[in-house]
Length: 158
Image (cartoon, rainbow, N blue to C red; front, side):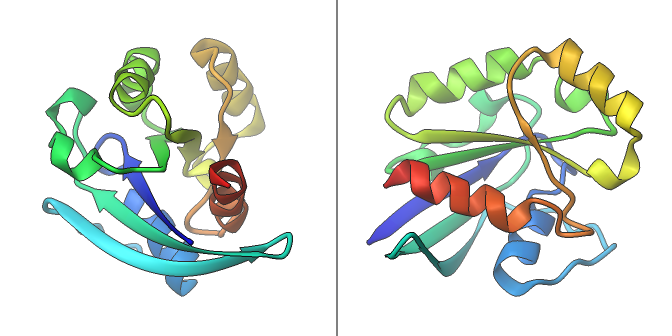
């Protein structure tokens, strides 16, 4: 079975790095801006199931309403990524998530705070309290929770 997954969030939060880590087990310190959308594919296996993920890495925008709706159409899953080390990427997260849920009410949603390797446990506790929305933490650099994030979303889409 094929499932379309979109990665959305501000520019520079690590969406492309998460995809590179998940699909190719690679990380690069070089920042490359995504123009439009980049599509990758990976087959995942879990609990006796096999699923092909078509992963759409969408160019970062500060407001999700700026993202072309045509990129989002037909999505089964959404990964919303923010940068734990940049408060501006999660200051209005509730509104961004509400917008995405309004556009894609049947899509499964995973919220990821990326760049966990750049903050302390105390900073993470403070961010978690201030956001007030459940999220998982990842590090595209170390690979921490990257594979699990995509597998968890795959299970939810089943």
